[in-house]
Length: 289
Length: 297
Image (cartoon, rainbow over all chains, first blue to last red; front, side, top):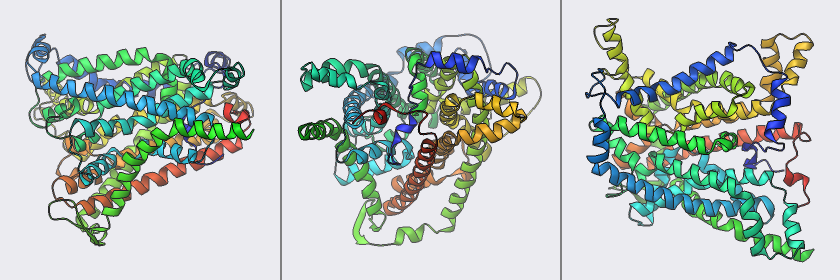
């Protein structure tokens, strides 16, 4: 086993999680509810949510400042009907998120299958390469891409953002699909071949359906990451390709309007829905981020 | 047999190469260009002149940059320290809880929320007419706004806030795999709870602690947005220097040299992480055989 195998990042669920958990955690459960670690956890969760709750609360404030003057939905009205630029930025973000995560999901899922199931020259190289973008500071990735695009004279805009987002999405999909493959019994593949399935049939009828949950969670994760990225996008965007985070940045820097509070609530709400949709994969996601 | 082997190579290659080539062109080549550029002469309007030069590396030792470097180290160490201090008990409590999914969701929801929105929320809380100052004034605890933002304290607080999920998740994952019967055994032979945790739990989750350290320290070390938006004049970190060198001063070789240092630091961290987890695996290798190792590929 080479030391450059990033699959350790994934907790390979070698047993049905539920069964193991009951025997392990309920018998030896720490019954002291107010133990030190539980208190720290509760305080940390409060710490994590307080800023979000403050912003959400003030999105319903009728005045601009942080003095509470009464309930109002006017910032939501402004968000919906009077924020044309914001929606254009959102549309850009949306186009890039969908296209880059679709490409990343296809490329990374195929690569995960290739690397987990077959051995060939260059396998280790690709695996290591797929891991590095996750740890490098975003500023470095952004700057190196900016310099690269300038060197090859590719104009900065939607296309360069698409390339950058696909690049940073690949590792996450790769890890999530790899985790799914670790659970998969590959003797099924031999069975399929013994029964006379062609390579294409094996791929479409056996491999694809069985790794679908990993692929879907990878797709959703990369859509989220693409919608959320600011630093890398900041460097590779050009005129006319403002994304939502870039727009929020300009709002923060050059005059805050409470519309941003209303926008925050909408975004937080969609993240809550996403976390709910992915609730069965949260453990795998926790292990890969 | 020979046919099978050939087929395996062909399939593995077909499946993996599209991603390999993509990452090679759009990730590795840009990094190599940065290495190359750091040894070039600065171009007049950005870019470089194709002439070998060590000027960038000499400029790095400018006392201004050294001050920023020292500050970056101090801020990163402080923020990482507090983050880990909170993350360890959190990961432990989550792993022992019956509501793991809910707790994971509660950690992951803020983590996935747009980072600019989270920074903005802190600005709304800390600024001179922000939530905290207005609330304190409302209850007549203070009469003048406190300077809570645009200083080092705000930078460290917001950095802890941004990166604490990165630290909690790997620690949770390793503690969750830990066999708690070992703790019971330690206590049966007379260790008290603290002693059992220090000498039985912590050594067993070493790789998780290292992973979460790396995933916290490296991004904080390269932080750009947080010092820019909640820091003051004296809060600049290396990330800000790099960006200014590219966008304002247009000294690309210098930006490349700084980037190279950060890249090397990250690579060292990753290698440390991989070595430590490989070691751990070889020690407990038989406990958790993965399918691939157990199979006949």
